Amino acid sequence: MKTYRQIVCDLRQQYPEGEAQALARWLCEECFGLSQTDILLDKDNDLSADSIAKSKEIVQRLLRHEPIQYILGYTTFCGHRFHTAPGALIPRPETEQLVNLILESNKSQRPHILDVGTGTGCIALSLALGLPEASVTAWDVSDEALVVARQNTELFPDAKVVFEKTDILSPPNDDRRWDVIVSNPPYVRRCESTEMDSNVLDYEPHLALFVSDDDPLLFYRAIAGYASKHLQKDGQLWFEINQYLGKETAHLIEEYGFADVQVLKDGFGHDRFIKCIR
Image 1 (tube, rainbow, N blue to C red):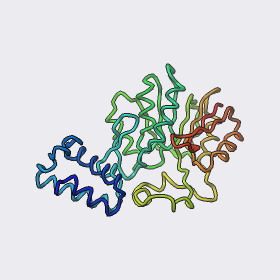
Image 2 (image 1 turned 180 degrees about the vertical axis):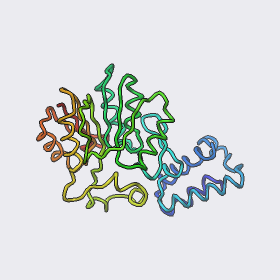
Image 3 (image 1 turned 90 degrees about the vertical axis):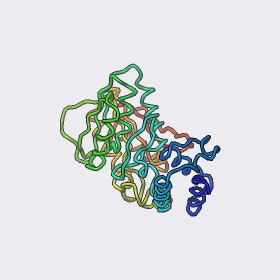
Image 4 (image 1 turned 135 degrees about the vertical axis):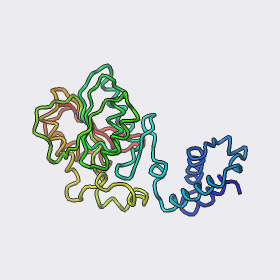
């Protein structure tokens, strides 16, 4: 059997047909350099024994629901390839929309930007690439995430980002001022974990995903409190949010004195972002 067809057949044990085919195409292209045209021309019959063995190993990892982004060691975000590893959350397409909104709102500017909870560094680095005159700082409390973020810095020498180990729950007491603060903080309540797939629950860092059911807005409160003191006048505060808590999050931010608090929807029509002004 052709390698591509064999991979699809094996993956059907755990994945729907369409997802099995997509994963098989991705695997063939990224691991073996085979395009969809190559597959149609049966060039996947010519793989070496080592390549076939490698494909079987990857299929077994996929059958254990390990994310393909961790298996391949990268993902694409905002048109750029970012290194990924289990210590940092895999960037999502929704977060690309957040980055694009910020870029659109800061054209021809030279803002001082802070990214809180940077993970892979995908937001900070994408903003630095899109706003070459910007000064970007990125915080994370996780040493593992910062290792991944700094590895990504090496991929983009033109993107000037300073990464710092900082816990927003105990922020520095300094006099720095920012024009833009952005964060995609942990916002999934533990009670929502039953809605999540095993590839997320079993492999991605819970530190970057979950908050307690009792205080789901913990990080929004901390970031809004910091931003209320450290954003410049008319500075922008941007968040990615829990789709079920849009109104509650907006109300909390208003309590910290922010104006023009807007809840924005993602491409699926869900409440996903907040923009506001100090």
